[in-house]
Length: 166
Image (cartoon, rainbow, N blue to C red; front, side, top):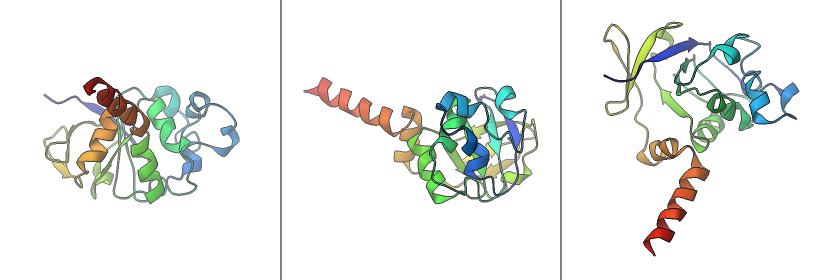
């Protein structure tokens, strides 16, 4: 059986300032993460657990290009974000930092605290009642980047592999 993930719900148009509030940008990422989503979900940063997922409305990650907005979720242990659409800059930053983003037109059907599983072979979110919500496929190179923990860890691994094969 696939691992179950608890859902946290947020609405549409969650911007990078909500994910990594500007007032804390002078701090390190661990401290920024403690304030993630505090304006819309004050309890989130303290209560989210490794493996939980964030389900959102359209336009997730709009706003500035600050990579801390994706990194805060990574540091909090969020497994994935599931939304109908993302800002292009946020999308790329998230994968570069090892955060899985699933584009799912029906993401807003997911309910707060619902237990779901992710079927990345069939690109679907599976609800407790068996309902499957289709997600857009993700290119293999982006999946590999997430599995490696982001772009930099992936590049380090490649370098190690090249050195070992010489």
